[in-house]
Amino acid sequence: MEVVTLAEIAVDAIARGLLFALLGAGITLVFGLGDVLNLSLGAFAIVAAVIGATVVSTVPVPIAALAALAGVAALGLAIDRVLLSPVYRTDGEERILLGIFVTLGLAIAIDGVLFAEFSLRYAFPLDVASRTIGGVTVLGSTMVVIVVASIALAGLFLFLRRTTLGKATRTVFQDETGALLCGINPRRLRSLIFVLSVVMAGTAGLLWSIQAPVGAGSAFDLTIYGIIVSIVGGVRNIEGTAVAGVGLGLLMTYANYFIGAYQAMIVLFGFVVVVLIARPEEIA
Image (tube, rainbow, N blue to C red; front, side):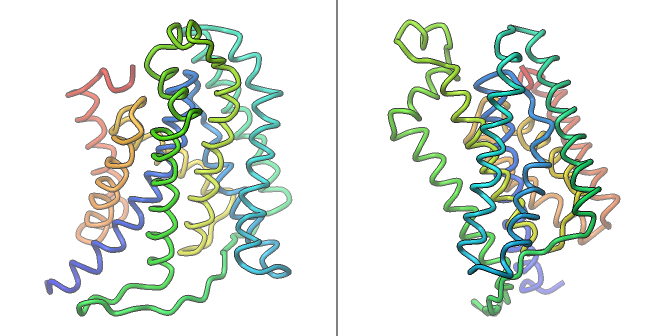
């Protein structure tokens, strides 16, 4: 096999891995801060893709993308206030279980609406020419995914490390009791972080729809990818999640190329099982 072909696969794999990282970050943010496993994350990604693909015919592409992200942010805030408030009033295993039931029900409800009203598959049209760099041809859509996803992840890291709210968030991640003693309100932070997590998912959904059409049936798959990446990277480790996303993107894309799509999924889940056996504390 030519080196150029392997390099082209690597570029596509990095793009996929960055999308995985966005989804994994969405899972990690909410679980790390509030012990809620958001099983509806993929549904938010599809909602963003549907909004973007629907309105892009009437407004410029950047405005359509912003409208899609604003839409999922507003939906996320409403969900947080209405459905998650009772969850956060519980603690420990009760919160984890209630969070699973609530977000699973939410995922089913959103999927039902999408199947009923938006049953088609949606693509976000973006006309960007391919480029040849060092003999390696890179699709325009792939370049957009890499650039935008990298900016989104970099912005998330800067927010968590450099801003007052971000530092408060990291404090709650590490020690919620200590954060309370310092005057930090975890509930308000959880609302902010939930909205941020669905915006990350919405960004992933939009970028995914640039490369291939998506529909309601894709929501579950995207949620599973996010959970897998979060487990491998560490459910309370944003940086580890980003690295795991890119790594799993490389693993899955090369496995897909060499042994086929179904076998690639087996490899992916097998790798997760190995990680769980070797590091069971990553899901704690």
